[in-house]
Amino acid sequence: MSDYAVFLRGINVSGRRLAMADLAECVAGAGFANVRTVLATGNVLLTADAPREQVASRFAAAVSDRFGFDARVFVKTVPEIRSLLAACPFGRQEQHDGADLHTYVTFASSAQTVDEVLTEAAGADRVSGAGDVLFWQTPKGSSLENPIAKALNRARFKEHSTTRNINTLDKLLTR
Image (cartoon, rainbow, N blue to C red; front, side):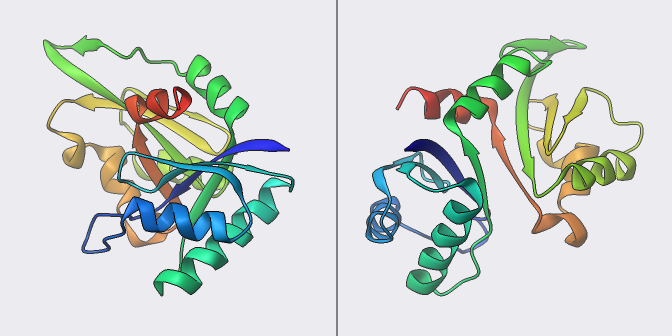
């Protein structure tokens, strides 16, 4: 059995509302164990006796069938999340040019997607790619104006990535 963190893209934003209790019930009904949600943005912890690819496809199918939309999911093991957080090149509480910074972690469908986002947002500072994960920082209150956020919002990347504030991942590991 392995512990997984599953991140749904686009939950409780842009009009797609989903109660976390309903999501947990759906996922448990798909045969996953120890299901719990973290915050209201489509973060799910679960245990499964299956490889990541099967977890992703079974999870996405259950959500799509129950809620009627194509679910985009990104799956990591809990130990991978711990390793990612340890490898993050940015601190939790940093300042740059007098501004408080927020640190974000973007999960992408592939390392190629991360490379393409970095190319698209050439010249962006305070960003680092590591395989299929992108770490980036931006001053508090300006995340939508950040070149990385703008690139990630383009149609060619939108369905191939999902972003979480690093504090969300910290909370996930305490559950």
